[in-house]
Length: 288
Ligand code: FAD
Image (cartoon, rainbow, N blue to C red; front, side, top):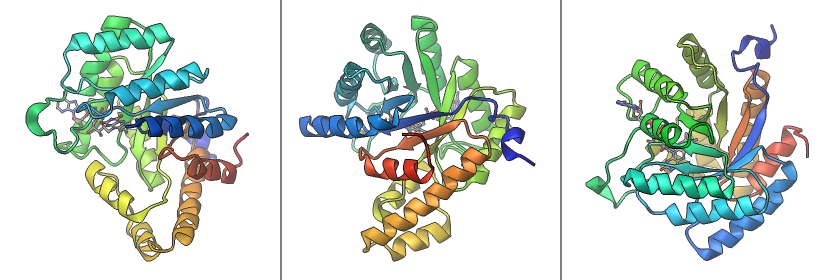
């Protein structure tokens, strides 16, 4: 059996994209420009830039987005209400529109630690509705998907239903939280297809380059690190070269499985570095 043919996602054209974390200083903005220039050789469909829902990186996001856009690359700002007045979000949408930005990643966001209960977050579906209301079809809207279930969800069923609500509100495509178990992605695809969801859902790929950071981040966002991967990373944690070699092999295999199974591309979490993405790209034999 050809697995690509059996996946409901196999019919969508493949698209490869790169995510940057919003820079927090002038130095970080300059570094991101250099990373962008190196990755540009791979001609991604677009770059995306994260957004701190609690306010920590909002200016950095806009600056990075305008810089990348100014270099002629397609770029998708991440966006959340993040406790802001709708008028503020509307004016940011207008700024992006005026700059020629055509794609957004609409999120509820998370409250950064230290900001606490002073910010009330709005669901991503409300933001998607708002963007459609204010800007019609101008933006291609991406939303987040969770093959391993979002950590705040009451059940798998409600999580799937709320994902569908984002699509019904007007999302055009989705990017997943990272995962290391391809089966979770394919099951998620089958489950949402049964609910009538028919948009590209691109796997988010997190390179394995650092043990401590990955464990801390994964515990927060609900991504599972399979025991055998965790144990190997732990074993290699003081040997960066072996850890990176192990991580690259594991993530390359994951990407191969996903693409062979019909995933409509890959979205790389670049960690604001060019090398992890470049290495995966070359291992996969993708065109340069
Ligand atoms: P939602 O889709 O709103 O869902 C959040 C939770 O609420 C889920 O458990 C869902 O099941 C539930 N839910 C949804 N609607 C309802 C409803 N009507 N009633 C009750 N429950 C509901 N975070 C950032 O802060 N900045 C970023 O730039 C950023 N980029 C990301 C990019 C990607 C590709 C991904 C996968 C995640 C990103 N995140 C980012 C993390 C994301 O913001 C968090 O995972 C956040 O907790 C949920 O955001 P969401 O948009 O998926 O939320």
